[in-house]
Image (cartoon, rainbow, N blue to C red; front, side, top):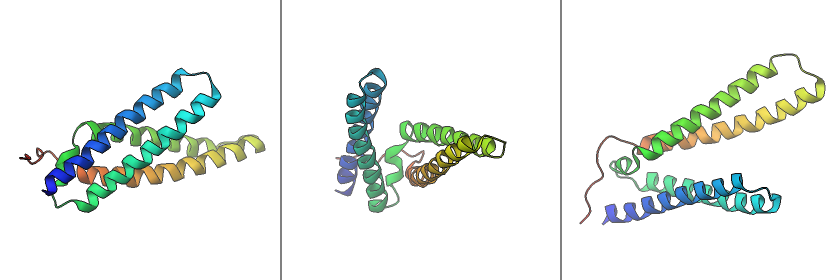
Length: 141
């Protein structure tokens, strides 16, 4: 029974993930600030819900839950983590160089926010990596 319950949560994770991508595409394709803002709010909520679902899957896990989220999620999030790490490292490198005072303050603020996002995302990736395994999901009858 626990496997069925876990699969229900995993299904919601997948639905939130796909919907989040659809809203991201909608944001990119629109020139309307209001539309992008509305779509961005929805996308953020879907992202937060997906994150909460993954944490709940981890909490409920009995040692076999990691097999439910292989491949698609691991690859996507590993790529995102790598990209975000590159952005943070580049900002840090630029901050070590001479810039005008206003630009330095702006880049420093952006760097601090990116670093916080990177730390948050890294914690998320750690949870995700814990869930990922090479084994196949347990068959549900």
